[in-house]
Image (cartoon, rainbow, N blue to C red):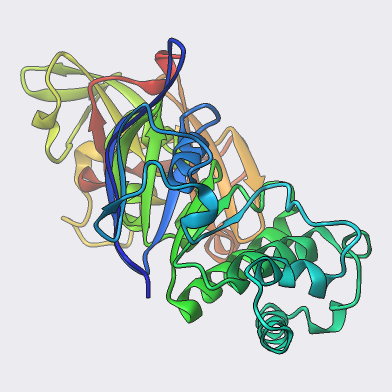
Length: 362
């Protein structure tokens, strides 16, 4: 049965470099957690501190109420899957899956039964006698998962396991991993720089930057209400609008916008962020009062980009490229072409407001 894992003021330094900076986090039994952030943010180092492959500089890793800072990785009863798969090339799928069980000196009959169960669970039964070189990347990754879960770990840790795979295989394996976690009821910690992986699978996302946790929340919360402009930029796509505050009014160039909760940001410069799918085309048939007139902006289409299920339309407005996304079916009913003029609506409650702009900090 899974148990609570707590990180208490965990810090890791390498010389003068602070890789993990005073991290506090409680991971509940059976929870699917994603550590999400750009390269160098500390997410993999934090994973290695949990597994015991790195030692904390200060702070505590606590599992089931016991401090495990000095417990070696083999004694932590955690399953680990690395990006590189790390399969034994001279062992078959069955032998790779059974490796951890043999190290624990489990009786052969029980090993065979457990391996059969795992291979069936992961759809690998037909490939049991194949070697890693005879498998696709997605199949090799499933073997890595199988080997990790064969020992029935209480916590499963995955370090960017899908990063080397193509898009279609990634999507399929996301479903495999999520279903596996739900069926086994184990705690799963998943490290990734890919926001789609995190949004698609996690119960909670832990967003990291510069060794620190910047936001924790469920996928919808992180996407809808990013705490900083860095998160709004990193998770999904956001349009950023540089505005000025004058006599309590938010000005985007010559446009005075209605913005819900603008007082959350102090100062004369306010940065607004709005997701492309939240921008609307004004429907002239809608009754009066549906739209706030202040937030209707007339704009000319610059670029139309077909992306399959959605179409992205780009408008230059007040020196910014503003992207709007429409479902393909909606776009097909009234296609927009470069040079066309339309009226856009920016709902007052669709804005997130910030006092700094991430793109200008790098």
